[in-house]
Length: 173
Image 1 (cartoon, one colour):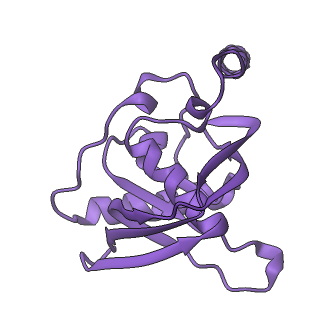
Image 2 (cartoon, one colour; image 1 turned 90 degrees about the vertical axis):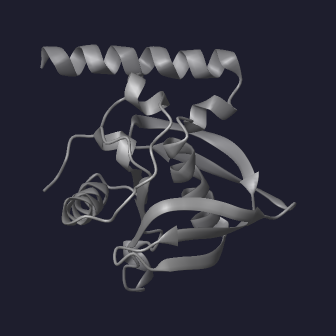
């Protein structure tokens, strides 16, 4: 089931999310709903707070549809970065909670991440390139941080004003 995506500014997007204590069927359904929502948006990552659930859950799939590669959906409960490279990458980031706004953000080029999969098994993987950027972006959401928080205050305020205007327009429609 597709879920509505919260649009910035929304106080839920700035909250620290709670760890997932036990994997329940409800949380697995939430993960499936989030994947459906992400693919339909379309996006390459989505965090639970973006659909109003303050739990440490993210989904991502950075395989481009036109690459010929099969999709690689990842569901991560309680993800955490164990290590990151000193080498940095800059990607133009966007966010489903901040539609049509993009900015270059610098992050570690490679990260090692640990998480629980949908069956409760501990997983660990090294990500680089776009995958590394995406997983860091989504984990930031779990800590109440948005990609615009990396920008200079004036640019951040400008984007926030655009989002307030967008929310007003959508409320009227």
